[in-house]
Image (cartoon, rainbow, N blue to C red; front, side):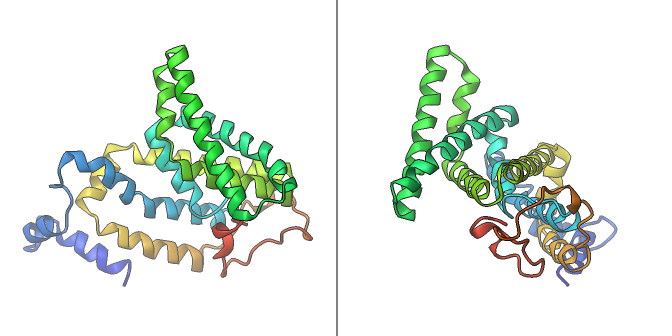
Length: 252
């Protein structure tokens, strides 16, 4: 039903059916003010991003940093640009990885460590803005729009995996997470796809059904052999059917 009903509504918008005019007016975002399109774009592409992550993780078997970090990165890349966003992300993650051992040695509680990391990322963003003023590089100022929470989540996940699974696994999963985010960013940049989702917002419900279908029937893990080996004593591979912890803690 989750897939069929939205498709029925979409078909009802065809001009050959008497419901065309009504459904095209009642179930459409095409008349939303243009200034709202950018904000709507972030919302409309979230289910599509979820499908990409599920396909990557279950159908292909490629491990990433979690079920939502690629989506968050895609939202950030749409604001900052892909190259600038990736470069700034690498700098921030390196800083978080570098400071984490010191925070551990200080025996700060979890909330203390997270608060320090948040503050550190804020300092890096401010420094990037100052650097942009010094060297007069306008594109560098765009990193100020990179969501701070996204930077902290990705950096924290990467540093945890680095400790538990080693550098190869952390680099692999971090790279795959970025690639999925870049792919979603490219899809979001397609005017045809953006307009399609504005005209047919009911397809978002169908995408939920697609996620369920992938989870139930397309759990093939075709490229799982490409994932770096992980010490079983550290972090065993998660069960496919109970993947809830795959983004809430370490995204493993």
